[in-house]
Length: 105
Image (cartoon, rainbow, N blue to C red):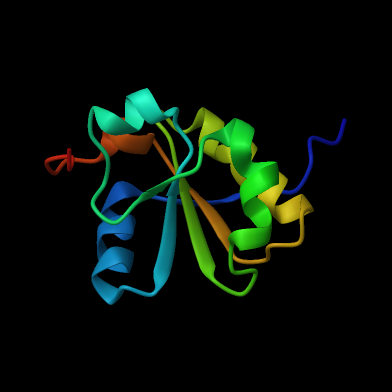
């Protein structure tokens, strides 16, 4: 059975290093109410249900990292982005739950 494209994974420690470089787009696919309770600094909120509408505004050439609360929605969102033609997409393993630093509010 085929479940769509295989999604590359990134750990929260690797994410921290990527964010220091400043060249990635971090997309938090949680709902706005979840995002408001705390998010990784620099993340933009695009709920998973809004990806279709937001995709035209996203840079297809950008390195995109997708995060959610635990990692399940971000994998689903990353698969959708890959199917939509984005080529450099990864998902954060463990989501914001694995992020060990203070979440920005």
